[in-house]
Image (cartoon, rainbow, N blue to C red; front, side, top):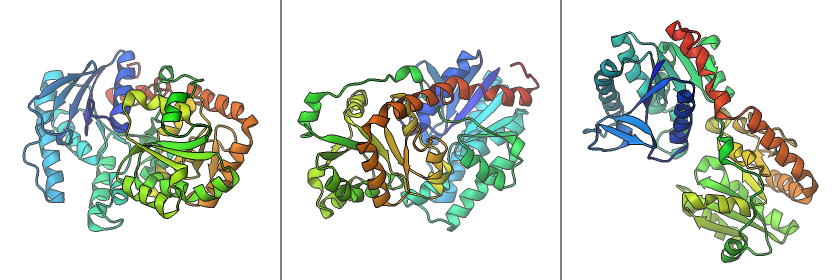
Length: 402
């Protein structure tokens, strides 16, 4: 079985997108399949048409001169990737084209699939028009939003099979008129072997951060508006009144960094909140080990209600205690009171009450830790997820045993 993956970007760039891709490719190869990989112009300017990273060989698409106008720039991305596919496919003769979000990749793959008679799988990881709303680059139900959504729906209808990462996205796809039997969920997962339980706090680091003698809750990741970190900060005065030794540790950075620092000053909680900024990847585990409770306060919106995040799974894999808002993406992952604690989204008081109760019931933590780890071990690991591709590829190629 030869599978050509059509990607927006890949390693060596670091993102949830590239890490999911790397895990899928590794497990598909473990199944004995040959995987090939091409990235579009969004990978960035490069002089090399081919590149090997971490044992994976990538074909690159020259970025060229992309138009600065929204619709024309998207057309340029599609046209360039379609041309590159036309060069690659005769060389490797794939059995399946597997295009990953966004829909621009799917449109280019559909063109190539029609030209060469190859079935196309389209994998939806998120609806990019919803992410654009959160990032402020488009308005919900605006012209660009509607055009992007229409292109997405077209790609879904034309693809021979559709996969997606969670049930929320699957429901939305089916609601667009896509037959339910055409859509398969390949959920996000974790590399169990990369996570261990029982990490101990580095007291030297804790002292260096000025947090000695404190109980710590916090968040590690990118500071986007949809993460709801402002809700966490607004809950701090109420939490601190009940737990004077409590401090909040925010590790990372992003578009909301300055706004969050300003909000901490406005709320007069600077002494209770520590912003570390971004830390080296090989140091992140030390910050996880400092935290008593990880908090994921995502705000309720289409993006967060439809898409499951990866961070809570990684926390469970480490046997961490976690609290999260009750957005749809979290409801798919976390069983309230069993693998974590859920609180009402966008409600600082609800966050303070549930996290405060969690801090006061430390005797429940061993059960939460064990249940979370068991969940990812049995259901949310990459071999289990990637095995779901077998029936899809087999049906499209007429080789059920592939």
